[in-house]
Length: 244
View (cartoon, rainbow, N blue to C red):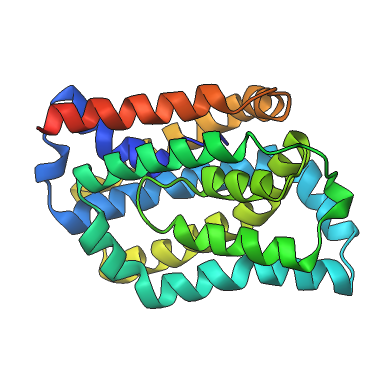
């Protein structure tokens, strides 16, 4: 889980590579992205099963309240604002600008002192992280990037910030994949597209499962988020130049 926005890459890379992806039917593109996210979500659940089991074992009233505060803002925002946000901010230009804004925000937040351990997380921190997750509804913002930015603004140490980000994001990723998958099943999918969609989901699952073992320690051990921030700004700027 890198703070670089997977959905942003799905939107921008075809533009940069000259593919005709953006010209496909809007609902078809959304359906394909659902397949990718479903594969990614399942792989993350397997890769992080140790952390998930640890969280479940340690649940008490205080932790349940904290996790609820992380989930309620993005869940409520998705129910009310998901469609308008996709229509108004889902263009390639909007995604590119979101990448730049997200990268700059992450770089600025990472300059804060890193003094708080994971055990210091409180209800107010959970609410701030939940609001950050809600902001990630805008394509290109990055759920992981937004929650990491919030956690570093709250002065959590980087390993603690990464852990808080993962624990907040995974339930939302699974819920979103399940909800969108349900919508897709109700809408139906042409039989001719079943194989490409399955291949996309399998590729997302396999690549995420393989990469997680390397990426989680990489992000946890990072001394700075500046490389991720710089990459996001560069990607967004390159996309804007291509679109000009």
